[in-house]
Each structure stands twice: as C-alpha cells, then as structure tokens.
Length: 72
Image (cartoon, rainbow, N blue to C red):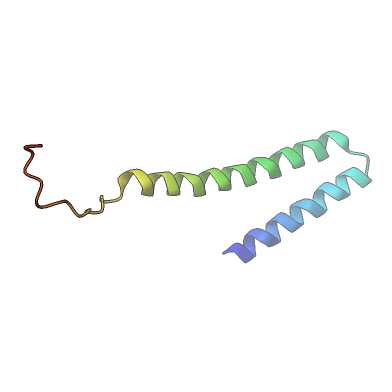
C-alpha cells in the first residue's frame, strides 16, 4: 500500500511542477495545499490510532506489595 501512496505523491508533485512551469500559479497553490492536506490527514490518522491504543488498551497488571495491610 505505501508503494501506491508514493506513486500518487510523485504524480502530484509532477503535476505541481507542470502547473508552475505553465505559469498557472493559482492551480499550483491549490495543488500544493491539497497535497499538504492529504499528508497532514494521513499523519493525524496515524496519531489517532496511537492515542486510541493508549487510552483504550487493557491496563497491564502491576505487582503489588502483598505485605502491606494498610495499617501504616
């Protein structure tokens, strides 16, 4: 799957360069913004997975001191 993303990204970058070389400034800016939004969206999706795993994973059990009877 990452291979396909790299190909799409490369094609998008070539498209941006073509628009710049054709003096189509507004279309180039729109394409750059779309590319940045897509990359930011992917990064946020990955981060959401990390946060969800942090909050919703089962807690791990820790060892407790069996000799503590609470009379300290």
